[in-house]
Picture: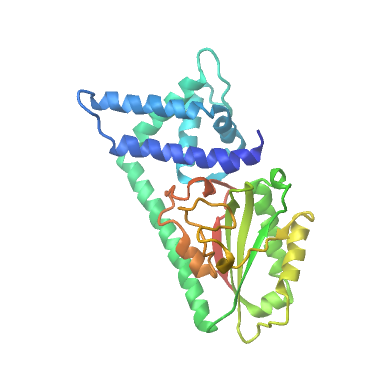
Length: 319
């Protein structure tokens, strides 16, 4: 098992399972003659069995990404995990099963901690605040883009897909992708034409679930008066992206939406997911395709659940 499997498969799976656990504990009701306590205990036991199927994977996730930013439900699990781990040894960062403290013991104790947390009013307040902050950030980016649109009516938007070739998936952890993207952005913003012509930039880190590979939707909005159809801006972007990725970076060529089947999708997302065709043509479209809440699991296995601390999965900037 490699670290990219943890990022692309294990973390989204854990996000979904803990959200399901919350939903059952919060909204489920016992069927008589079962008592409420018996009902909750049954949910804990059933969820523990679900978690034990991939115990090794999420146990390694907790260690490898203890300092990463994680999605909402994975973060709740991680907090409970290290709280339980402290009961064994306050200096531990990794759980090794023993005859006394088995994997089943760990899973059930973590779920019990989460059960107590989910029952508090403070948790629901934290959940609501988290979603409100997310909504405000999305609205703020919409406003920024709208402001720019007023400065240059019908401003051209160019869209690029920064990614990696087939066969290099196992070499690209999310930390490496983000490090490369930061280096790419820094070099790009120093180019003369960027400073003179670009009035807004926007990116969104997504996943190609067919290849388990990262893709960055990257948009540049130009001052219409200075934009030139005679310049191939992709040449500079490809060169800088390759420089930042040790020569491995590519610009994906995505066919026009009109050429695809009705349920076509360049990244293999679930037909009922959020990233189906038509692919967003500009930052406003992309923002409109985002989930309504940050705690949503509607993206299913395509939700990015691990990122470098401090990095925003999507963001835009007015220049």
